[in-house]
Length: 166
Image (cartoon, helix red, strand yellow):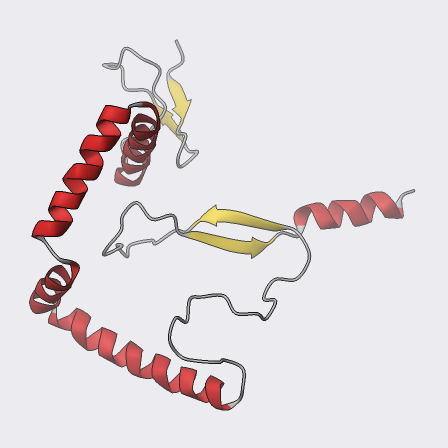
């Protein structure tokens, strides 16, 4: 049996936990363990209808007992720094958004994350990577998929080299 394994989430080489009887796939870091749990839950929801129904009912009951506005209000009540920072950033967003509306680059300030009719991506190759938050923590929606999209130059460079050698 191998003494090392490559983690399926962080892709780093780790020594195996000798107490485990099955082949280890994830290291012990919090991010990797959360990825393992999220994968298990997605698979369980897609294969076990009873589990899926119970989870939906549980989430609905939780949402009914804790409305979103009261959750956010309570969070802001215990995090005055968050409130101050959010007000400052919102002021900057409004200022920038208003300027963009005036210049005709943006139709309205609301829903700044919605795509508009302007083609923001040019033709080419892109790679989608999980976004690394570093030491910062996500506040809400721990299961949301947040990615970083980068222009990928590797294959394009290889294509240029190959076509140049023909």
